[in-house]
Image (cartoon, rainbow, N blue to C red; front, side, top):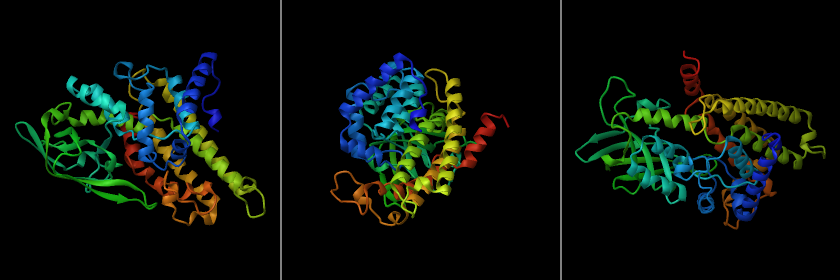
Length: 406
């Protein structure tokens, strides 16, 4: 299905595609490709992800979707899609994207000249890695209900409280964070958007391991943490304006959801082709399995069509269309269904716990064929897909308000 995502290419687009393929072939090592193929969530194995960002930056590809004035490529939407397609096809590692894809656009729009000069080049080069400090233990999916307390002093803001479900904070040296710094009858007001160094005294982490055994989430504690007021992005007590802008990128995304679904379906089809149906035939010959795969292909094609419509409406250089939130709802559900069918495909091989065998450089061999390493942890990791970044109900409320005007 991956081959259907791009559609027909012009001669100029085909030449551009070949340039990208040559670059990827020359720079993707077997370990980098394996790390990309075994990606379970938002990033690949971190040391592989970090190494790949360094390579991308060295060749001018550190953030191809950024405006050229900040080090981006100034490519057309089609060129960006071809770039993403070729990276996906080649199993390039997924890079930790909270800084590059979420925080950076906000710094570009709301940041001071000093903030842009301090942060953007280091995000681009892969010297800085950012975590997102939004969710809190008692706030659920209601982001505006946050209670991390920030007391504004003469030069600093002092933070006390915690954030939870903070993805890959153990790798981050910076965190963009929301704190309640002022009182207001409207809960969206009185919030400030802060850019914080993770080594600031008073910050500590508690790891949260998911069902697959992977350490993807954390609780981050703030105990009298002093943040300079110069690290407020936008205006103090008006962080909600920054948040609304950021959420367009988080919910719309820079990643093609259609391409992601196509990649997963190609993986599922390949998996089923080497697994048997119990009668000595490929699992693809099983009528029930084939029917379920067909339904998923139809779902993925619908996502692809909607995404093409949304891309056509997007302004050049602007944030993603708010239609992206519709794709976020459906693609997460379809993505989970793909992992469920993959678990059915591998049967008993889904039982062994093989975290070390999935780690690049561990030297641990898999129990069973290599292709069975991904389905089980991928299934567990994707259980969070319909919760992370807001539940489906939150997204549907957003669609009702912003798109339908209800």
